[in-house]
Length: 373
Ligand SMILES: *Cc1c(COP(=O)(O)O)cnc(C)c1O
Image (cartoon, rainbow, N blue to C red; front, side, top):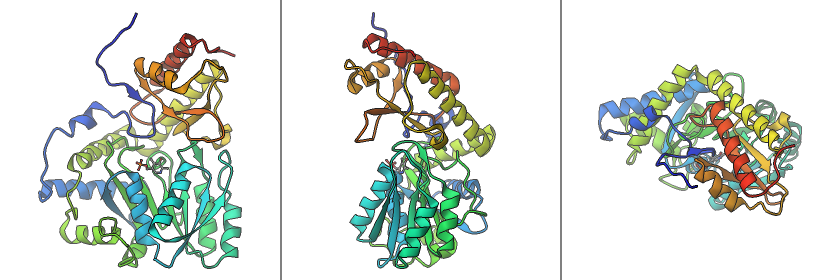
């Protein structure tokens, strides 16, 4: 028997995410880019974003149109001088993307490889910096969404600071859910986006940059659209975005941040995602599905699972059948091992995770894949 109702599937992905009705309803208006009310909203959003990282005394927020990668590229292109050199600790797909961006930008890069199931090692980073004084910056992914691993950001930041270098952090999938305290953690710039743990819709990202570093970055950038210094200077002068702002995305984020505060801010968001992650991992264990990472390295953001070993398993068929039950999963990103990923973030609760587990179990039984321990 096939059943169908016209309802949005739940997104168990690292973004775009399932958002609340209130966030979606915030987008039911049109806004002018010159309008003072809209520009106040942008200013409000930026202040709240800096506050989430406790950076009000030292850092400023520069929003930028586009997906998260646009802001990673803008941060690297603006903050790294053309003769700079960037160390990239690499334990996954988003670290590899940073290396690719640096190649496009013509900035020198040094890769420091780690296994995909191992966090980046602060001591190894410090040794690499000490060995090469020409390295000016480190570009570190906080939660490597390719696997879901959490890199030890505070220790890495201390190591980079001891060596007197600058640190640019891709905190895309952790910002708002995993605490980053700019008062105690020396970070030049943090990059994140509207459509991840803040539970806005995708379409803008932002860079929380140390004001002195941003001021010193005038003229570094090779690209007008990606020049964060220019974007910031224009916004300071006019309160407006330099080019057409993603108005609906900004007002949705404004509403999402209101709801974030009502929920209890970062501690509450972290607790909900951690509960989601536990419900997911425990439920999948009941189906005999094992996470790729050791529990100690797992961030409560997205979980990579080993695919079932059965010959009747096929990801495409599995994905389609789980989707038909109302849930969108995510393919694995590892080349060596067959995996799939399930996100813990978005407007979801542990009850939703239990339903996902039920849908996965029913699907695997239909596919004649053995489930259960
Ligand atoms: C989502 C994400 C990005 C940005 O990806 P986009 O597809 O450009 O939004 C960058 N880094 C990490 C770690 C991410 O999770």
